[in-house]
Amino acid sequence: MNWKLIFQLSLFGLAMAFATVYWIPPHWEPAFWIVIFVICAYCIAKRCSGKFFLHGLLLGIANSIWITAVHLLLAKTYLANHPEEADMMTRMPWPKHPRILMAVTGPFVGVISGIILGIFALIASKIQKRGTVSGVR
Image (cartoon, rainbow, N blue to C red; front, side, top):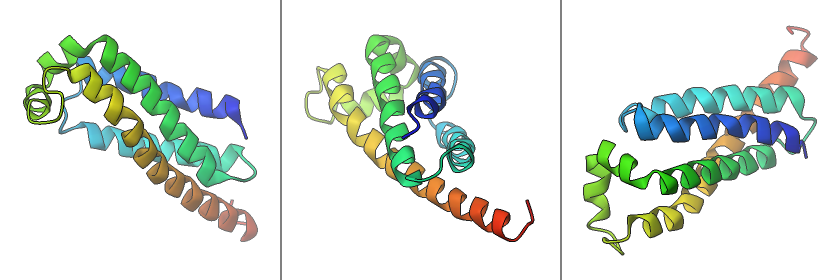
């Protein structure tokens, strides 16, 4: 496992954690994540020799740790800047405890995004391998 690479790429998650609190509106967030996932998948395929899916999965979990921690620390600001999410939370379990809801849902989102990122990394490794074998590289 390339733990150094996972940590380095997880800094995208740290940057997105702050960006989603202060600057990026919820409807733009998926576009940013797709770009980040493509960049990370390429880096994993380029710098790892195997276990591409696992690298992506662990990276998704690491990202969720950063994001959950920052969103918990800045929950008041996050919810003030994301009124639709704040309203949605009032209809969920523990409506008076948004931090608990964030702490519970964060790991699930991390695993789901990690699975997606793992698939991206696996696909990128196949593309990378095909380019190397055919001499296109």
